[in-house]
Length: 605
Image (tube, rainbow, N blue to C red; front, top):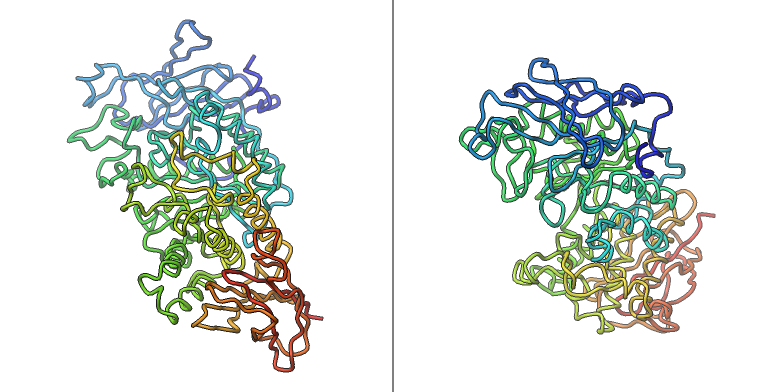
């Protein structure tokens, strides 16, 4: 019998269901009945290709010959879920002979799970499609929490191969903060440390657990109401431990073989041979696997500027056609709205919002100029060309701005958690400023994203080493600063979801005070309006002395829905006016505390 963790995915009396997205060059194992599995590999230079099976630990290796079909080889064989298999072959062009001899042992490039330290692959049971995600958030409602699985959990859990399972057990922490989507940094097997050196595009990362563990993680997220986004790296192969290199022996002039020949090197590894239809289908099959076999709700494509534009158009068109409910997010440098309007993505990472916020806080690169500051803030609220869901914003930083691989010295020490940029978590102003920026992001157009640890005011930088992982002591301990920030995060997230006006396309700037860095803008729908007032300055306006034009007519009552300087978040009593009525011109007179974000709500009745 298969191991217990695989039994739940056994198909009842049959093989794998037909995929919704047909790919002519799809390869890998595929069950055709409950007891017979077909295998197909692409090996144009292969000779005498066979599948080797290890049915039990320490048992005899069983060999089944494959038949050639042009550049592909296939066979049907009786086997059981959980058995180990690998590919063995000779080669008509063996550039690996000196290192490996005449017989090449290889992994199946389309295996779903592998032994990390060998060529053995682990055969998954017949596919049972994931259950529908009832109550999935709409695209415009996503509030994203980004995390790296291996360092989100304890170092011991990662060392023991329990990272997927340990993350599953902690997902309620994320849901409890009011986030409704989690973006996992790469989960496909990789050879580096952060995940962006994919070894196998369809296999789960073995050192973190099994493929079944990873599926259980997605299932648990859905149970908690969390949409799941996978980070896919299709632009290059792994620079370390690349199992696709010279896969069928062919590799003249260090070209990399059938998966890489004719393409450029990048600092992270060689680009895939995008011009080949077989490679195109390999990349597409990776996307199909995460969607159809794991039930993910979206894909974030890494560094799409390193991929051909026509291929991006193909990918997005095909995915949208087959899976209209999957959100597609691109990372492109520099940010370009054409990745939405022409390449077909729904959204794009917008790093500029983070860098502009740093300019404002540091008074550099235009941030000291009142007019330019206001322009930066306006473009964060409504980024030009990106539409309502078009930009994924991480004002406080994503893994790119917070992560550091070189002992805190990347870019001269510029990679830090946001609170460390502002003076540290022991500084009251730094804590207040972090609260204001987080809530401001939730009021802007686009999809807000927070990197793990930002919600607890974690300091210094993120990395996978012992001292810079996610700090569960802050998250679950009694630290007052972390508790206040988490309370603000939860309240702001809940407001974004409960106030439909905050996720609509409508935005109108109604008040600008350049000297004091006050910007007010309105978001609205047919039922209500949300007046968002950002104040990124030291001035203090009390005794209902500050006038703000609401831009929505006179006589309306506006109730305070959120103040980042409320006492429960680390502010003080009386910092903000709880309710205000507009005069005939539409102006309200209120308190505006220093370093704050206020949201007032009024119904349309």
